Length: 284
Ligand SMILES: NC(=O)c1ccc[n+]([C@@H]2O[C@H](COP(=O)([O-])OP(=O)(O)OC[C@H]3O[C@@H](n4cnc5c(N)ncnc54)[C@H](OP(=O)(O)O)[C@@H]3O)[C@@H](O)[C@H]2O)c1
Image (cartoon, rainbow, N blue to C red; front, side, top):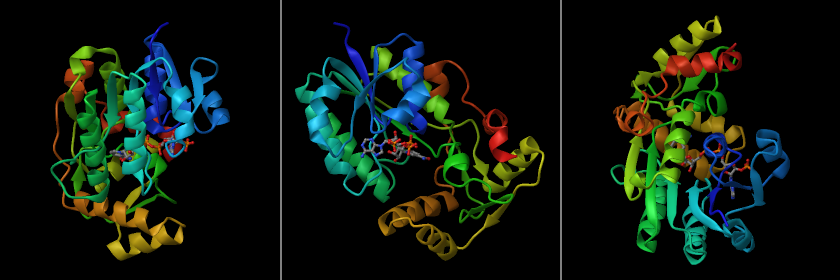
């Protein structure tokens, strides 16, 4: 029986790309999904699907059957630590050998809620004795599509002149696929960034150029950003968590550039301009 790689978060920004990279490499891949219809649309019949939800332990046994490695993408929920750790315990019992965990830049060095949750999950994976690889990416370039896209030509963010070394989700996925298929990445921690630290003004200028229309950045006060998220129906815990990230970025605390992507995948990380060109239709 060929041992499998289970990909969690497989219908999301990163997991989708990880599953596709693995399948393209010929790895025996199983996608753990909540929504089969969505998954089938993404993957066609190419990838095996299994029902999976972090909060439903009854699904773990089938999801983990014959699985040797796991791409672990913790869900953003208030009990992330508990549900993710319970899944790690199940993986260990099922004989999994190696977990490649998506984490976040700043884990272990900065104090922020999402980082503390990821740190607790990292500790649990380490303490479990399983092989691990922790991927700590900076903010995804895809956030400008999924979370703060230009609205009527304006990006509203409370980042002041802060800069960040945004990284393309496709690079994170390529690194994850390498870590899942190459033993050399066992027990390693990587900080994944793009090739340049950019302010939101610079992001807006690049998007304007690529989209062929004016896109501007409006630096909104924190209170305005908070109220807008609450008004849009986001839960207070989530708004608090995101405001911490905005504050860190306003202070350019994640503007560092690392060589990890280049060293692992053997080519330079995708530049913001390339990301923008590849998704130009989303910004027109
Ligand atoms: N965005 C950033 O800039 C950034 C930066 C660093 C780290 N991160 C970390 O990246 C992760 C988010 O990655 P992403 O952007 O790929 O997420 P995403 O696009 O929101 O996708 C989340 C995936 O997880 C699945 N999911 C959500 N809740 C689940 C649950 N309870 N059980 C099982 N599956 C569940 C979703 O399934 P459905 O399709 O069914 O919803 C989807 O497949 C978080 O851990 C975050 O801390 C994000």
